[in-house]
Image (cartoon, rainbow, N blue to C red; front, side, top):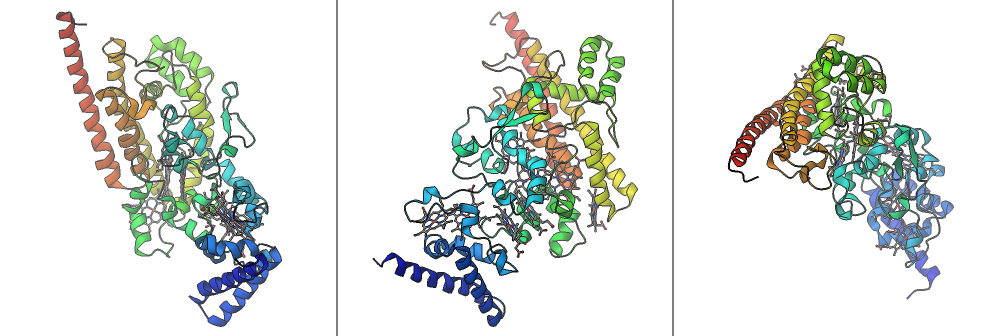
Length: 489
Ligand code: HEC
Ligand code: HEC
Ligand code: HEC
Ligand code: HEC
Ligand code: HEC
Ligand code: HEC
Ligand code: HEC
Ligand code: HEC
């Protein structure tokens, strides 16, 4: 065993030759040599040469990534960011590594205040809270929804831990000051979702593929929809060109880290006071409940396509089946948590502002009316989807009312769309497919100009599923009536 000081010299030598190796791989040798020298000097000055020297052996990939990134190889050597800037200096030996600090977005804030501020104001920061607001989160293995990060939590860890809803506060939330985060050794960094460690590259995050590990698949296939739209196709044919927009052009324009869309993930928005009062004229028997509901709702009009009474009614059926409205059509505790605090649904002011922002972006490349028609068609598809979905929901609700279906033990609502795949009957599982797959693909495909996703993966199976539910309802009613006749109930 070499004495510690000798070991350090050896390590530092290894580090320099390793870094040199990676630099010599590209560009002119002379320029790279001077870069190696300045980086080496920077690590010495920065007092993280021990970290680098030892980690070149312990985790060579991390050191290589660090040195390849702008923070490890800055334009001005004086801007060098060391391992110790993010991980602290408490850990210095092979066996005390548990003392190393694990960074959070807060760690980046001291040097990137703008990006962190925008990020915190956007929906990505709420991803952990949104996950936990779901019925389906409860009772799942920790490997899926907590520190194992092998399912929901693997994607939703880009959200900040520690947010807590406050029932009385509506959209107000409190933060636990880091208590929940301290229960997790890894996965609190957030920013590494798009700028993966330790390269922390801007270029990588500008590539639409940076979004594709999460925005894909079953219930939000934005990646698949994008690559099958003309925008994606043009981008693919010339990845460095600017003719076609990327995810970032439309959702992080100007490098703004605050992400939010008008309709959101679920294609939901809050009913307005005016929408609900207009429904009374069509459904006078619901007057008392609707008047009471309207009192707590925001006022205003939605741009492009506002809700008509039929749409307000259909949306109310969906909200009820999701446990967001109770049987008297009043907002539930779940509505406060999911719709308001996790921001799954927006009120007119915010919806209209986000829509205007998005239209302006399209307007860089398309005519105003082209864009307006596009959004009106998209809104109409949400409306058509809601109308079909509402029919299916009412059929299942009818089975509950008539005692043909019973609420499973422990369920507060029946049917309950937010029980996801834990639904107990075939007919309710079919509702689950509509909720998270078909409905989503139909409207998200429309907004991403993917005709195939909109139609064949969305609208078509949606209609098939609704027809199947109505058929199954008839069958269950017939069977139930026969059972009554034979007195086997
Ligand atoms: C003498 C060698 C040595 C030195 C010096 C050293 N480390 Fe480590 N470090 C290790 C070893 C060994 C591990 C554990 C790696 C493993 O388990 O694969 C580790 C792990 C880590 C981890 C991960 C901790 C975890 O819980 O997973 C971080 C972060 C880290 N080191 C940062 C640093 C920083 C910052 C410095 C300088 C201030 C530093 N290291 C100096 C050897 C060293
Ligand atoms: C001590 C200050 C400091 C801290 C802490 C810090 N950075 Fe940086 N960061 C910089 C500097 C300086 C640059 C610019 C280097 C250059 O361009 O020469 C930079 C550049 C970047 C870039 C742009 C890289 C590129 O390819 O252009 C990203 C992304 C980034 N940092 C992310 C982060 C993240 C994420 C964290 C927290 C985990 C973080 N930074 C923490 C100082 C810091
Ligand atoms: C700009 C900030 C930043 C710098 C500089 C930085 N790290 Fe990290 N490091 C992170 C982040 C972020 C994580 C992920 C933390 C988490 O999982 O929540 C991380 C995680 C780690 C881990 C454990 C996770 C894994 O993938 O094994 C090790 C080991 C580590 N860093 C070592 C280093 C070493 C060595 C250096 C210097 C060569 C370094 N880091 C420089 C931000 C940084
Ligand atoms: C592949 C990564 C991934 C997995 C796995 C995943 N999600 Fe998500 N989740 C996302 C993405 C991406 C979004 C945003 C999609 C959108 O807006 O269209 C999202 C959105 C959500 C939302 C909506 C938030 C809102 O404001 O509208 C909730 C709630 C949610 N997920 C809960 C869960 C739960 C619970 C699980 C596990 C049962 C889960 N997710 C599994 C990536 C994932
Ligand atoms: C959803 C993906 C995503 C996440 C998460 C993300 N970024 Fe970025 N970031 C980007 C994109 C895209 C750009 C490039 C923006 C542009 O084109 O100007 C960028 C650019 C940057 C830059 C370079 C700014 C410049 O003008 O050179 C910094 C610094 C940065 N991000 C820091 C952060 C920090 C800190 C966090 C965590 C709070 C973070 N990012 C989280 C996508 C992301
Ligand atoms: C041409 C601009 C454009 C591009 C490119 C684009 N989007 Fe979108 N995105 C939209 C529009 C428009 C909406 C719906 C806006 C609304 O609610 O009115 C939307 C909605 C979303 C939503 C909310 C749920 C939904 O799908 O309606 C997410 C999440 C999203 N986009 C992510 C992405 C990702 C990830 C990519 C790249 C793979 C991407 N988008 C590419 C314009 C775009
Ligand atoms: C690590 C997984 C992950 C990555 C990577 C990721 N996202 Fe997300 N994104 C999510 C989750 C989870 C949500 C839902 C957050 C919530 O609503 O609580 C979300 C929400 C969004 C929303 C808001 C949708 C709404 O409901 O209004 C937009 C827009 C968005 N992401 C765009 C992007 C873009 C663009 C990129 C790439 C530059 C990206 N995301 C990268 C997981 C991810
Ligand atoms: C950076 C420029 C750019 C931006 C921004 C942009 N587009 Fe496009 N878009 C194009 C180009 C180029 C085409 C291909 C024109 C053609 O079909 O000949 C296109 C095509 C389309 C098409 C036709 C697709 C087809 O299959 O026929 C639609 C619809 C569309 N864009 C809608 C939008 C909407 C909505 C937005 C904003 C949310 C938007 N675009 C933003 C450049 C852009």
